[in-house]
Image (tube, rainbow, N blue to C red):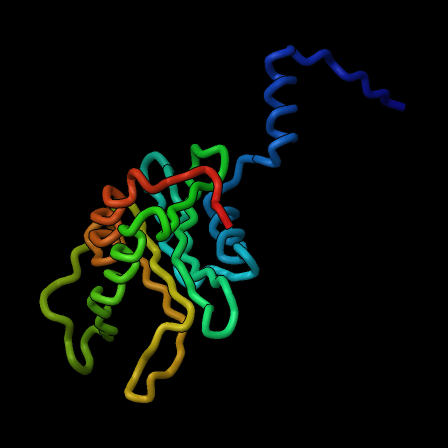
Length: 190
């Protein structure tokens, strides 16, 4: 029979383990963070949309979720937008709240101006203009939304678009981040 004999752990490592355990923070992979963020609710509200990005070379990533949060009831009911951001090197989520940062509404409203993708079946039907620009390394961006609208009947659809550094979503998010620089906080006020 083999017996287990624990080895002493240095005080520094033991301290790190204790801090991580106490804070509930644990290292996550991009896929784990992405899946958890799409399920994460704030004030009983799931995210309505989000943008997720991961770099091909160094594997840096961020997961950004967009929430519409409600307060009040009846004629006093109002809403505000919040962005929840997690990155590979963060100790926890950060928040940008439209109550404190008007850029949140500006950034999110700009999603509505993104051009729709062309659904191209190469060699048949209507061809997309020119050749597709393919980037083999870079930063993959996925923009997704629940309750998007499509068609003349205004049908509710879920949308997910993945592209690289040259996609409209990547350009929009790249231009948006500097506008949000001063907005991030480690806690969200109810």
